[in-house]
Length: 322
Ligand code: 8YV
Image (cartoon, rainbow, N blue to C red):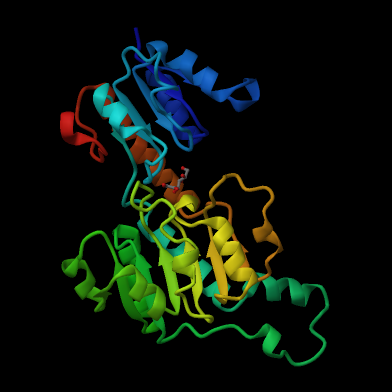
């Protein structure tokens, strides 16, 4: 009897077809009712799972009796209860590296859009408000040669730093749980405390994983240390920033602007952020190009097949017990 695979989010159709040809596939469909109830029922006799964007933990996986592997189509894995998966000896694989450059491109897109107020001025122009030479209300802030502070010098953070250093002649600061001189030297990045980074950066890009240390890492006290002309960009996870504190900082013009791709609650369908004209909001599209999502799906598929065949997946989050 073919092994059973639960597909718990939309995945690439080619990959889905391959899975359906190899395994007994059950797809979770939000239109059919409560997703967690569907997952609990489907995982009872499942051997593997593939997808993204769902919380999988002791509650949703309690009925899983023979689950070997969860293959996440994402680099972030904050929505999986890793301690529980380790206790149950369930492999968790993710899709790092293949999305690095695409996500770093998006981070810089947000940085430039917020710096020069592109969405706001686009609408201003299209709604016929350009009736004379622009004035201070339409001015942005310079990027070239300015100071870029990266919070989280992981693979994506390093790719963002490379763009700033080589592309815009920026001075790079970084804050990380530990110093990474072997990475930083490539773009002359200086390690500093979070406070120093916030005080000295013209642009602050948040690129950390979401974990116990980074939850609400940027709150009112941190925002108050930023410069009035500074721009904050978040491409990590929404919960790394206290969203209410950010709204207040923007309303009181403590900082110049923000570029956001992630939010405390997603999908975000209403928020005071939408009323703030110096905030650029994107719908969690960091890795969202056709080519990159295809690469992520391919890697997640290979991880799943390896795990189902008892081989250690190539990008494993929890290799400790495998
Ligand atoms: C994912 C992401 O594509 O990879 C991650 O961690 O946040 C995005 O690139 C998204 O979570 C859905 O797959």
